[in-house]
Image (tube, rainbow, N blue to C red; front, side, top):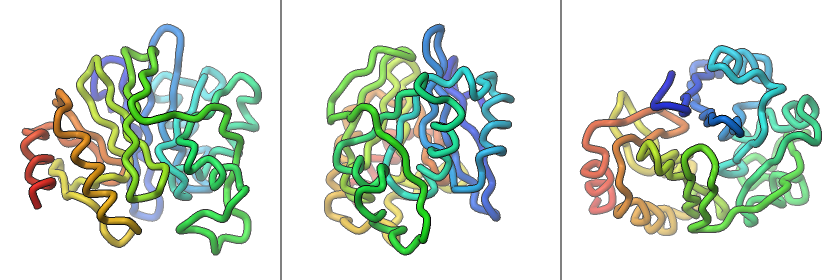
Length: 220
């Protein structure tokens, strides 16, 4: 589903749990934001191809955080794309993604997905590609959780900092958020953004009065 020019929201169904990786495209870069659950590689590949980005044209992966439904197909992507691919994440989640530490919420898995993070991102960093991407460090769900603000389309890629239901933002998902205080403080970073659209990994797109919705969640 095209959200705006160069911004595609993918739909991957995992046993009834629909998740939404994002594809960003411009003349130089094809970027995948999050990779789905383990075992969804072929489904992800097909969704990317349908959105106009064959896997061999992928240039970067940005991981919003370490949870298994976000890094699940990173090993297969790295194997398929090799040295042509750059993987980005926040430094606080990097050792978990690389398998140096057990995943905070999925440490019970016998063989968790893992892969190299080539470059780390920091709060406030601006990436010049795909119309301009601002990195927002939004801890709470995990220590190194990040959100992405797409300046050109005024879109917030919220990761798991919030969820949505039928186009309405539902706030923070408390059962999967170990540090609710940090998560609530993180949402305040969205207050000054010029926003028309928010995409949550769980629940998808919300584009109706999103600034008012966020303000209401912050005020509780």
